[in-house]
Image 1 (cartoon, rainbow, N blue to C red):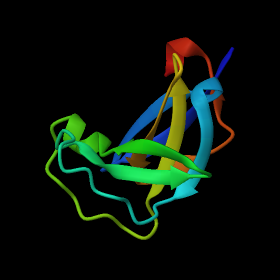
Image 2 (image 1 turned 90 degrees about the vertical axis):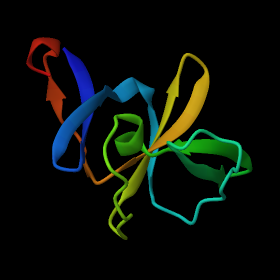
Image 3 (image 1 turned 60 degrees about the vertical axis):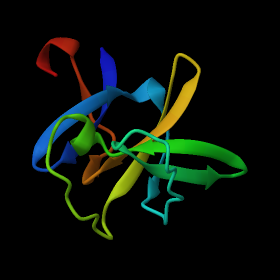
Image 4 (image 1 turned 30 degrees about the vertical axis):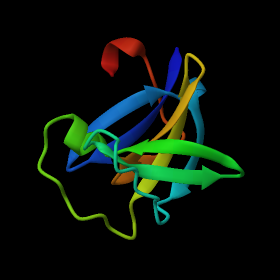
Length: 101
């Protein structure tokens, strides 16, 4: 059985393998990067490390939504690359069989 972190974005539920999740943080003020692609919302300083944060909705072709105080950033590390994803809601502690996700 593989464990997943489930999260929502604009009413749609997604999942990532839990072993890729470093942590979940509240959406802080981000530092804008002028030369970054449009779907990169900015960067954040996470304990001395500057990490990019992606607006997953824009990356998936959705219309830009206003950020909410309740939004979170899911910090992921996959294949040695660390980045954050802005998400609407996080469901912690769920496990599911790969076939059901």
